[in-house]
Image 1 (cartoon, rainbow, N blue to C red):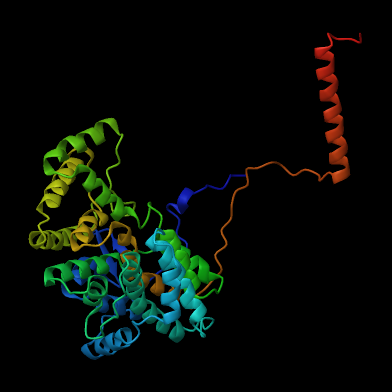
Image 2: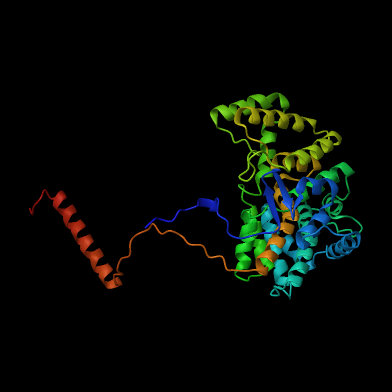
Length: 401
């Protein structure tokens, strides 16, 4: 009998169909419902992309207006939820407070058990509306500042800046941020999305699924990579040090080069060129040219010596840093975007659900009988007696005196 093959990390395993997104090998493009994501980032606002992921088509003018009105009307979080945020330790990671806040949203929602498509769509819009408010309020509370109420007259990106900083930045900054949200929105069966689908496959609720997805995204092998990129750049600090830094990293392998390579893309991440373009445009007005120069040196060297391309986290890390966001907030910002993909997959899973229950190949102790406690005690006494006799024999010279 042939032994089953184990796929560690589920690498190469297809667990289901999806209509939401894929990477088209022929064009090396990530697509959402067939649309290349780089074109969506260039020609659409993030709200349009959210609508696309939940409805399968880009919205008309009227559909977008109605969708935006619904989202903007639900941005305010409850006083009880604000109290929960105030009770969290200021030293706690922002992903932990966000995870706790989403769980509390489920406690507050009287319709949490309604898994119908209409109910989950409504909950998805509410999550999209309130997650930015939660993140901004949590940041300000940590700094000893009062939270800023959301503004319904602003788009999602502009409103987040306003709630976080108290002002809306230049349009180039907003465009760069909005593009990052589009690029981070969805990426098929990644770790956090798969975690969400596993949870709802048991017919659990959307809040439980999103809470679990946040837990998966928090890990540095998944959502925390953009934070790691910025820490690397801060370690290098100056363009004059970049070449020596990367040469040492590649030769001695004592340093990790973050933001490069991807399990899915074979010829470079299709999201990177346009994200790099808007990052460079923003860097000009934010006095961030040195980060551009450092990244150019690292990327050129990695391609020449290792034939490895940068991934999306590479331009996003310094983008968020130049915007003024604290580094621990980078991954929560990821959640603002990825809630759209998670919700899309949650609804797709429930539309044709089967409980996820994979097999495992056992390699432990063979089957054996259970000894009653009395016999185990007797065995212990015999063992103790034998050990005592051995010690006595060795210390007495082998006989009685």
